[in-house]
Amino acid sequence: QVQLKESGGGLVQAGGSLRLSCAASGRTFSSYAMGWFRRAPGKNREFVASIIWSITATTYYADSVKGRFTISGDNAKNTVYLQMNSLKPEDTAVYYCASTEKVWAAVTQGAYDYWGQGTQVTVSS
Image (cartoon, rainbow, N blue to C red; front, side, top):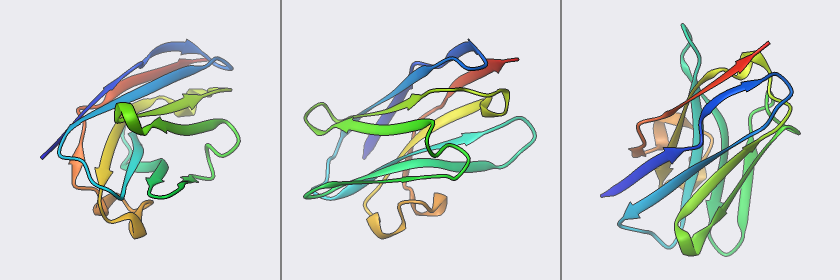
């Protein structure tokens, strides 16, 4: 069993930055992916970014955040980060961290087995 805990959400003005953190505990795997997803008010949860831990770290981004968000991690600390820059009001959402061993489906929400509780990000205009 893997436990995930997000932190770092909050209220920020448009154009500002936030860094989300996700600390993982419990069972760890030699090869796995960590992802960030978000659910905006009245919308379905959507993929934001993911990182695959194996011999090297491979990252993926949704088109809507590419160039503004950066996913990274510290494998020794079992922590993944989401640096969010140039935030827009449409980035307002609850952001969730998730983990999966199905690294071939790292951008697919349904592939993720473990989820955090989420952290609220609100971007004011």
